[in-house]
Image 1 (spheres, rainbow, N blue to C red):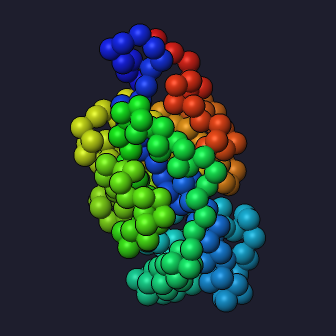
Image 2: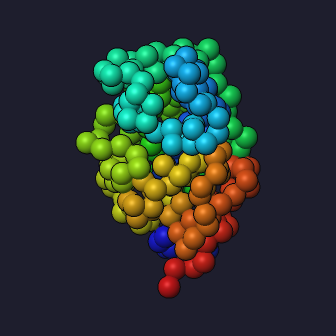
Length: 225
């Protein structure tokens, strides 16, 4: 990450935040949506079965259901069903994750722009932004805004480009292996606050228990060489 002109800690050029599970507690709602469809077709709906769906876009989830369980021969219809159920759950209300608003407001106070980078559809993101406050974000990238979604790097590359910064200078915040893979493939550094297993610490990855533990003035990365 680049250092500021004045002496002091290195700061990210931008904060690129996942939404579901990271900023708001909607990952459980999403997995409950998938689990309901699996149960309706007599398929396993335990943690192992749900793991591949964590952080996945609706279209990808529909393909996984078709390929892995033979559910929904028409993936478009399955995707529409998933989207309708998940949207209804989100519209009923979401809970902001502890520390999320504090992190976003701290970034703004430090002059660090924030982008929302989510695998959810635009209409779902707009619902959540009513709770988070759209003014806290300089831009947002949602499902369909890029040719490929997570775990491909495209959403994070698009967010960095919109903000006019290099991906390597950005800090991504994610909660699932799917999102983590996208952020790392884009070249970002990653702060992970996992809601499902599968994210390991690494040279560009720090794993914390909660957003309440994030201090932008003291990020848990070794100084750049």
